[in-house]
Image (cartoon, rainbow, N blue to C red; front, side, top):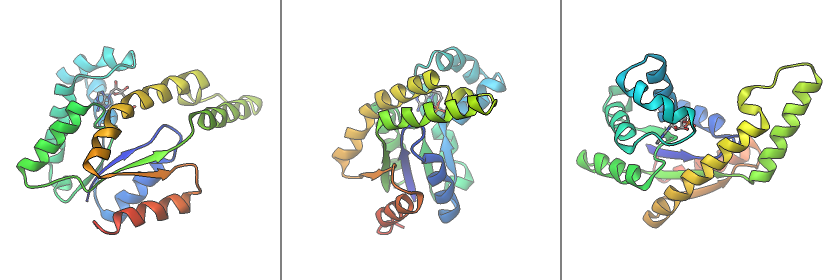
Length: 195
Ligand code: AMP
């Protein structure tokens, strides 16, 4: 099972990814996590990526394609994986297809959890206000301004890749604002024919 999971922050992607990792016994590969680890370890890639990540821009296709290339070749990813945060450009999507084709493989599905941006923002504003009223500190990711920036970056990036997978006939959209069990059922129905 080789999947791409797309969805804005707050749409429940983490919950679904965790569930699918368990269900299929495949790893979730997040380029953001890998890059953060590289920055922390101050590897040559990390040193190159640090400033770009801090500015909210995109790390070069060459770097992220390189790390995904190495990661999918590891033993735990031989039977499949869930990609999270990759691809973010058409060039990355094409490089992934070429990489898989060389091994006689292909993606099974790209699943997009859809969510209304305004609803996500109002949810996060509410959560931040509640935390504030309770005297708790607001997580940096839940700061409404930081959240809005992340949301805008998500829509900027997916606008580039969703048409690519739609054209290939493997893009599936699921309403991420539905209840967790409904979202899970919708995803399972999409994956049933390829599982
Ligand atoms: P994320 O945790 O997925 O939001 O990624 C955090 C940051 O890492 C992003 O804002 C980008 O700077 C960088 N990044 C992660 N994945 C990619 C990718 N596929 N292409 C380019 N930059 C990426």
